[in-house]
Length: 107
Image 1 (cartoon, helix red, strand yellow):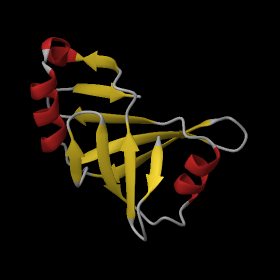
Image 2: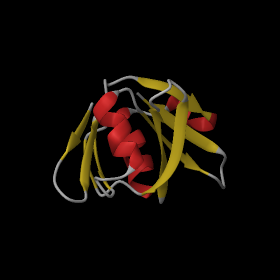
Image 3: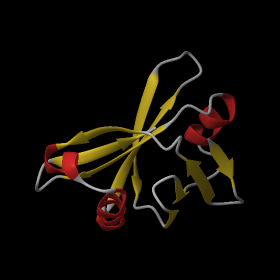
Image 4: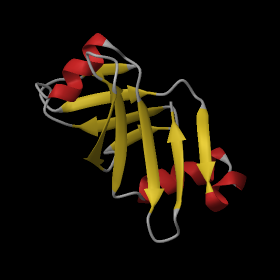
């Protein structure tokens, strides 16, 4: 679920499902996954456009999180991605480490 929190803030609330763990992340606890997210410098945000096609965009690191279910991102709230979320709340966040080639996908 996406919530508009003012001019530049967006809250992404996970369903609590970690869909995929890649590489050595397969054995991580929620606490270790949270640390992994904290060290990520970017994340990929997936949305669905008006025609039902997937859209993926890179965004800056999460500016705040509550556990691994609620992530606070900063963006222009008049952007195309925010408009897509207003129509269709389905979204995903993907965090990765390009050096170790590991990542985690949240829906």
